[in-house]
Length: 538
Image 1: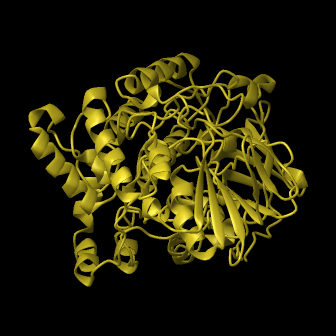
Image 2: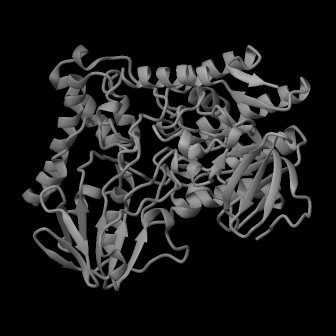
Image 3: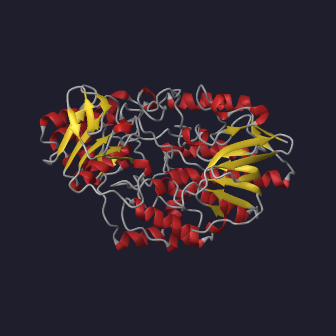
């Protein structure tokens, strides 16, 4: 793996993270602005979240023709996806293809984790330190650390005494894990857990699924792409480029303008049936008011619960799986490949942790209130310290010794999810306060990366040496993020990771901007066109 071996430890811009965001930021700053740049990456290769997420069944929930960079027509013509929803290995192959095409790896330092970043007020630059003791200086720091990269293993008493193996889905061994002839326990049934269950159950001797929160899921209906569709996407890439930019979530489908109340019950059920058969995230686009009107939402929620009960033949399991306590799409709505069908296998068990919680783990397995489960392997599909965790892990200190962890004690505060008051020349790609996790990420990433490029270019042309979000602008933006979220059902799900509720002690603040990518882009463009109004330039 190539590493940057230059003795020059001073840079115009240091980018942290070599996923979708970091690689495109390097292209924009190095190749388009001619800056001296370095990416620092914890892993030993490019890929970002897909470098770490190799768990069984790991697959993107955005259709492949949309889960792509759209900045290069040449790239769109040269790369061909094979499936409707790409798997983790194919996504890594794609990201490597991009890195090689644009010769990016020569400016990436692999196997180095940024453990400290401090702003120097005298020299108006950043000092960064890595886990191996390397030191760097840079005028700009761009945190492209991703929203879902900080794994969360719950603090369960006795885990260290377990004599089997345990793994977190977000830090999966590159060599894979064999479940053959193994008794496996999986804790967690969010998007990740729902993808992993069918694959693990098919290989393991026995799988016990420990469910805390029941979840909705729509069949993905994943399949190989036809040659006609592959040709169509290449031919019409400009159409998709524009189309993705105007849909609220950057997905390749439009949200219907009709309301649930516009149609009869019979027609509504026909619409849901058709969407269920088509599969994928666009189930939530069947009606305009599914995420804003609780009565409308109940119709979709009940339809899906009915499908679960219809699919799962074991009545006890069916009841546990359909006992869902939140509105559909109030949390990130999973899509699956035969998740509910897997509970019809004879080598699977399902434990409802709400009525039968885990008491502790011992050397042989998991002890719940009512039972002991002997296990060889425990899989933690327990999610991430999302959005803020990866940034806080960098131990960032801004002006006047202001520590980010203190600054965000009550929850994250940013201006546009791009900058934090008190931290000049630090940009956060898809940070809290931006659409980020509510969208098809490459679309949100391209918009942010290009905004940062244009901002740095403007500063260079106007001889500005620093830019910092204004405190009042950040407070006002925080109010806007809350106001927009409160028009939806999203903040009503109190155990959602959108609020940070999966991390004990984390302040519960709704983090992403729910007003849609087009509206958000408009706001960012207006600020850019008004000479970065709301930012302090010096």
